[in-house]
Image (cartoon, rainbow, N blue to C red):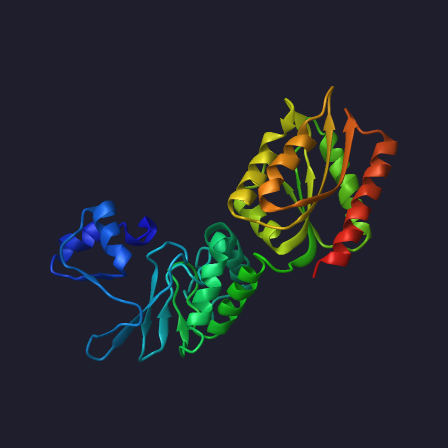
Length: 321
């Protein structure tokens, strides 16, 4: 019932006023509240089948993947699972809609992760329940509402979704997401030193300028990596707003149980570190180290920053993966 799926319903009703709309029990109430549609609506139950003549459809209730009324439809002849938001992905489709015909499959896998974290990750437990529920259904093609249709390797996208869903509470990858923002270049100068220290110990690190990178591209790194390095100056007694906004979204998406370290510049009084500690409490991030300096970093500060990054990198290399 999410409007990106159903926004055309009123138009379809005008074109085919006699068509019957099928949906889960919760769909019926939503049809009325979203579109004022009450007639020719039929509720189908979990596991129910519908013969269309040469084709038979079977319906599976998969609530909160990612709306409460979500239901998947299985076509039994060609064994096609129309999976709604599950197993979907971002990325404009160029030349084909099928996995076996597309070039750059790695790109679409990466975009599927970005889609998962931004759209579905908060509902990882229902995702795992849905995968378990459908484990014995012989699926040969997965046709989600977003992204590629998986007809050559349908199990690939299922396995990826299962791995990503398990990241919600389990162990993630041995890597660090470095998020920074800088007002006058002082924190950025330190960021380069910190990143050099992390790289020195061989831990994978992804670096994002929070003021110039859309948060949808940062969240996948946060979701999959064990460590978070935050670089932010103090701004009016708080964390620099572009960085704070990224962390707010991470909290909203329930990115849990990370090891975090923080560095940054301040002018006459701190406050960014205190703000960070308060922000990360709900998602149980553990602050393991911090390094703040006044104004422009000295050469000695930069050396300390490199060691600071190396220490955190070594810690993550031991706990991740």
